Amino acid sequence: MLKDNHQDIPIFGSLLSDEEVLLNSLRKEPVNSKIAYQLLKDQLINEGNARQNLATFCQTYMEPEAALLMAETMEKNAIDKSEYPETAAVEQACVNILADLWQAKKSEKPIGTSTVGSSEACMLAGLAMKFRWRDSLKKRGLDVTGRTPNLVISSGYQVCWEKFCVYWDVELREVPMDSTCLSLNPEHVLDYVDENTIGIVGILGITYTGKFDDIKGLNDVVNEYNQSHEHQLVIHVDGASGAMFTSFIQPELPWDFRLNNVVSINTSGHKYGLVYPGVGWVLWRGEAYLPKELMFEVSYLGGSMPTMAINFSRSASQIIGQYYNFYRFGFNGYRDIHSRTRDVAMKIAQAIEATNRFELFNTGDNIPIVCYTLKKETDVKWTLYDLADRLQMRGWQVPAYPLPKELDDIIVQRIVCRADLGENRGEAFIRDFHDCLEELDKAHILFHDDNKKETQGFTH
Ligand SMILES: *Cc1c(COP(=O)(O)O)cnc(C)c1O
Image (tube, rainbow, N blue to C red):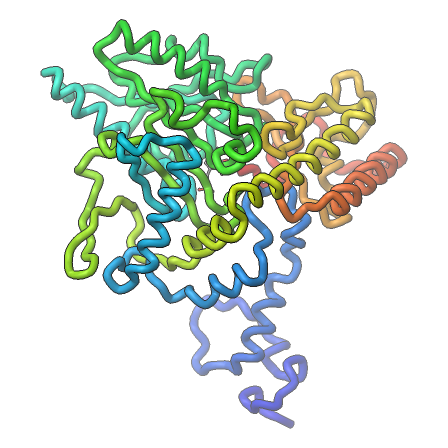
């Protein structure tokens, strides 16, 4: 009998294939790499098919050339600008492209950086607002001690903003999501603002529903406030999902640096930037909006270069993957990919609406997110949780969860369409969706108690 370390050992003839793979302390001896590869891959086998995961905004497909390029550049350290100056130039090119896409003015000297994702990007943007608020109080001769800075945002915020506030001692002021617009109502925002407001966050793509805050309306309200107050309000746009979609699909919609009070924008390169996780971006409309204290010098070609980041070492391969997409697709490529994705989302939304059983909150026309609830008058014994289970039997992962606080008696379901869900796959989903409804109508044993308000699935 061959030993496990013999190069000809068949994987499933090895002793190792009988043993637990996940250990709590290191094995004493190494194992054959071929066996290690297969057993570890098998360990992840029942995680579901990423391409059918309609719960996540995160990218689940890249072209083989992109994946190869990324695998081949995994060793490059993004922070080590002197070792990898060309990589640093690629990152800067991405920032320049985004500044141009978001219509920053060159004269203001836009500035930005890559991050691990939107969460790190939001931390940096939030810190910049906090530091500028403190500086402006000092400039006005006011005392900072004893004041608690606050941040104003709709209750549909993503959890990274709660983290920002907890980590950096900022009060989170939630503007309740309005049941009519299911987003931030600009008319009510000023009720939450005072001298200690570091900024207002507008969300371009609310995680729960996919709806957009009215950033233009918010900008108008902020203009009014700023004209009559010494304390100046600023807006940060959380465009994790929307900022790399809207610029291509609705270029006429002003939500970006065209609006004078929008000082910074974040996005997730791994959402509609079409890169595998994790890469994000944060840009400021001009260098004046990024306090110097947040910049640190790293060595660069014998000199030094200012950087801003919370993390230090990480692979540059995601940044290179982002640039690959920019270079490969160009503006029209992104536009065509995104508009096809939007068509698929709208088609799914129409099919769901046509059943007459659901009320649609988002139909995929802004970003390709379909969000719906069961109509009150829909008289069925099953819940959206049962529907989620049923869809899962066919491999589709579609979460069901309650809306935030004041609206949490509304349970919704959300479908995130991504580029790799082609129209043919979308049709397959629609067929499965109809079949699932039919099966549920006939089912006797139902699992979920309809009063429950749990969150099922990944709702980021
Ligand atoms: C996904 C998301 C985030 C967090 O982004 P990561 O890139 O996962 O860190 C923040 N805000 C919104 C609105 C999001 O949709």
